[in-house]
Picture: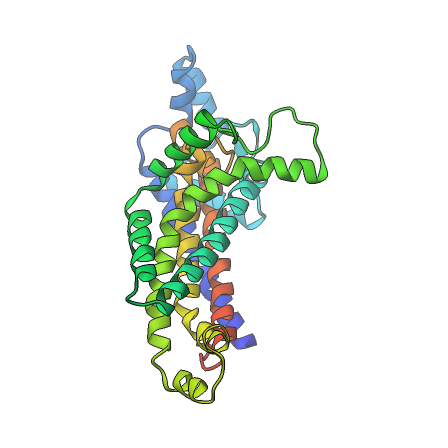
Length: 321
């Protein structure tokens, strides 16, 4: 285990290094810079623009800018965000929890619901229950999340008036404790549900196929031959091995949601990492955009490392390599 951890840490450092360098050059390849955006919003002279470029270090060659940025990054200094008039790290620490809650909730709920539906479908393979669940999975898979998000807003917020349309919490609320938590839950219910629908279908289909394959194995037939109750055979003996591909899918889902949450965060007005990156791109706030990319990539690397350990816990036969 220690050797495996050290090996994975060295790989993570290499991955993050490539992410930082690649992200930096991709951002610099885009036309214009922060000063151009600021000049477009004011009557700035050429001398003032040149002075700002010197102030933000944009007058230096790209390789020099990269060296300066990476030397600051080693000290966890992500620079300053003119867009938010605050250090980048402070901005990210204020936005990251929103995306983290959104992603973790979506993964847990979609994996739980999808696995349950997959197991039920596998237990009733070929009968009307299986057909109904399969049709539901197909509909959820084929419907884009932004369409479902808009439908949720129209029905639950506009028609019923039961859910808040946007935001992470009620503006100006003085609620604390359980009241504040409940307010946050109401604001996140529709965004989480909109993110879940597609992945519920994925987990359901994968769970059904995995369970049907596991139920054909010899040890399951042996358990049934011993006279064990069917519920115990399914949920104690078969489900653990059937979860292996679902756990792998969870790692892929986290990676996709961290990068894809921008659409849902924009629709529901959530102040998360995706919305922050979206604003940083249009405002050419390079430091903020690079900071968001770095933290998002680091989160994905950590989650995939945890997934590998969880995979080994579910199946001790898996060797760490």
